[in-house]
Image (cartoon, rainbow, N blue to C red; front, side, top):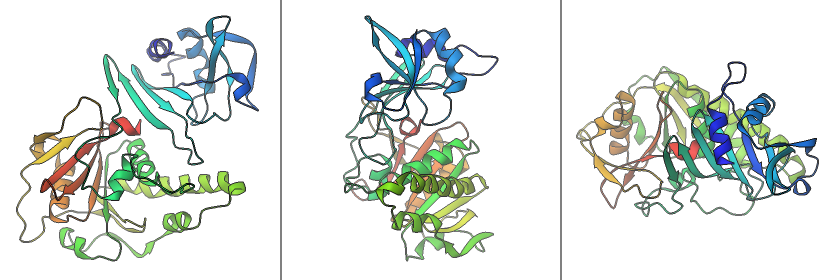
Length: 333
């Protein structure tokens, strides 16, 4: 499946780059699926031809063995828990995922194939013992109660930020605290008063199971609406309870605090060890200001999306007494 998808990603269909998602699932495991009368060979040319029909989110091509060969049998509408899913993101860029084992709708990334590089997601990345809960949620490590639909909201906000392609900054500040204002240039042109709470309200009142699909659609629209504000120059400010306080804010160094001079860079990928780096090695002004903000406001977290699609989370480590920069691109593809 990986071989066929890789070569399909390098082909073109009427000038378009294929966007394909393959799911390894038997036809009898996917009720109400669209089934082809004659299954097709799992070959790059067929995947490329079918790609326009399955490029929307949540639509997959079903693959299963028939007469000893892998074949494309149709398009399943719903996948069994933990099904193997392979997604073509860009030419030469593939992501291995598994389908959710709950109602969250969140697929979990397992590995990333980028050209000749293979990145296996580390399910137990080090140096996180003293990190705040929001960061654990972003990395998919925060334990949640059954049925808690807010478990993946931060990573969905991050993914939405990354999708608009303009780059952006998001600052997560403690609810009820005003100390973070000492690191923001005033007046804030796009301050929000009263705080915008549409996202918080949705997460505070989960729907009943029979209304879950509609609730998920409303949540997705709210997340995209809020995350879209990060495309405005400056930083968006959200509380840890998802209340929108401002966007387009300018970060300044807090009075009495030194300039940040170093940090530890890590990535949740097996075989990649944390390293000490200078802030200037991560990017431009957006990354430098985020690192300075977290250095000065140690209860806060900063999420930075680059125009080159890289995504970094900045948090303060009391144990290491420095800023941690977690590069989580592999989790958002």
